[in-house]
Image 1 (cartoon, helix red, strand yellow):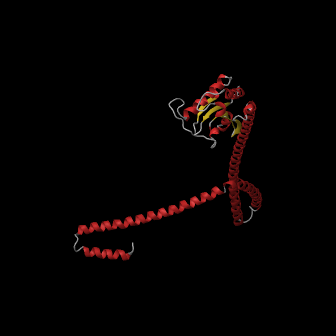
Image 2 (cartoon, rainbow, N blue to C red):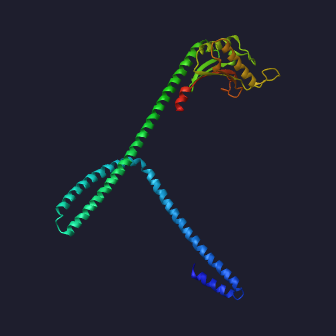
Image 3 (cartoon, rainbow, N blue to C red):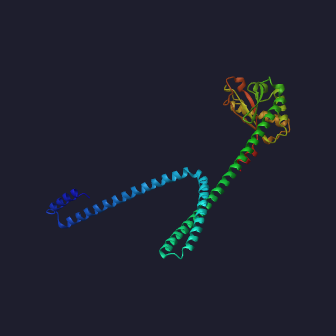
Length: 328
């Protein structure tokens, strides 16, 4: 602590002794000494913390640099290994020469012999260091090579999985297109009667406008619509590798009255169910692959109410094989 601060403080304490009892003065003096010691302790701790912080920052910078050059390690180690091996052979040859010189000069003066002996010892020590360094580099190089081999194996395995996935996706797309063509051919007679077949995102969508299937507000399928549904079901016979989702859609006009169907939700579900029943009762299609669902008015295809009132039969290929590869 600065003397310019301590001296005035002592003077004030000395003046105060005239009014303060000796015991009180000793207590104050002890507290003052403790405060000075605590201040010095805190100052030392602060300096230690600053030094530790600088050291940690330095270590962090060093680790960041090491991380940036990891990819170059293998090539650098290989070069170091070869250079060290060359130096090793050179030192080994020098050692041999020095040993021969040492043996030839054993009879010279003791001072010269001792000097040559020291050089020989230094050469041996250097040779041992190089051998140790060579061994270390060889081990490190071997580890890097093993790691590189593992990375190459992992990359090859990933590439193989990608190729398998691409092949399966291509096969599924081709199967979806073939299924679309088969369905389109089977329903060709209904092409201009509000029925469309198209493939999107690996799925086949068979869309049938309500005017082909149902009377207004009704759930029973008419004779012309029944023919289209039966032909579709016949075309799907034997198809075990896909799921069939039958969706009912309505326009946005609200229904009124107390009879069934009471609203658009019920109408869309009942119409989808009617289609599924016709499919199962007029073909050998597996009921397990069928699902009936109602979408009400919430998935319109545009502003045309007639097109929004529709049944969509969505053919969804099963992707078990694809998922098996993904989950490997």
